Amino acid sequence: MKSLNDKLTFASGHQMKNRFMLAPLTNTQSHEDGVLSDDEYHWLTKRAEGGFGITMSCASHVQDIGKGFPGQLGIFDDKHIDGLTKLTTEIKKHESLAIAQLHHAGMRSPEDLINTQPVCPSDDSNTGARSLSFEEVIQLREDFIAAAVRAKKSGYQGVEIHGAHGYILSQFLSSEINRRQDEYGGSNENRSRIIFEIIEGIRNNCGKAFVLGVRLSPEGFGLKLGEIKEVCQELIALNNIDFLDMSLWDSFKDPNEEEYKGKDLLQHFTDMDFGNTMLTVAGNIRSGESVMKILEKDVDFVTVGRAGILHHDFPRRVIADERFEPIELPVSKEHLIQEGLSETFIKYMQRWQGFVEE
Image: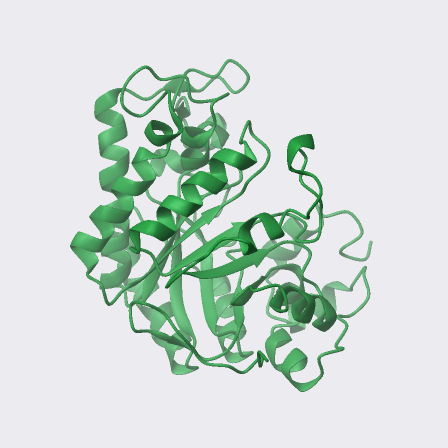
């Protein structure tokens, strides 16, 4: 019988104090050059204080051209190290693992934000993105690895590689978006090659005693469930990562593809033998009841997004009462300020229909 307070030990040797990870939530409240702001520091450290076993910082871009949002936290330059070191020092004071998510938006980088043409595995007429040259693919790989090294120098105990949600590594995985004719396009093996090379490079440069996770999503942006399952199985078989983070949007939904219906989307992954690799999932986990329902399905720990915005201490509340229900929506700005959100973050959350009171 799983307990919410179970301590989990990753293959890297690091220990997570409970089964709750803060999702890497976009919040647009750092400085435009990627340097950590006081607002972002306050938001994240308050979640560590609130009891999350892992406090994952928001998607942090590994190249300036990979910026996906205004006010995005960066990790592409050594100028970011001082702020990140301050952040990780405080997170770890609360016995929470400090993990950075490494990100590149690719064709989803707004041209008016990055002041140049966005990039993609192949030319994309819908977004105006241009194809990366072979040399640029190699540089992208090296910049993901360099960002992980920078994260380690900044005191992070690990990183998660963002390969989901239609961002650049997900674009490589998509047979619809990735039409390359070289070794990074074509077969599923070739399209996933860059992810495996990034993993190898991070392990070689950061060592085994460094938490390494990969986030994948199995649907949308031309992704095929069967191909993503193959990638997952290969990641597990290589025994070179600590956890897989499956972002499902709704952890209780059926697959979109007709041939995979008959069992819910999550079960397609929990049916796998994960060996030494842990599994976490994100998507519609918003109450104590949903946390317990997920953990009953051979998931090692939960990734919490919206509920962690509403309550900085969501883990503590659920551990105290497995029937805990978050505050009803919409919520007041005053409540969100009390929970550690800045005016900038609240303005971003107002884009979520029905989340913030008018």
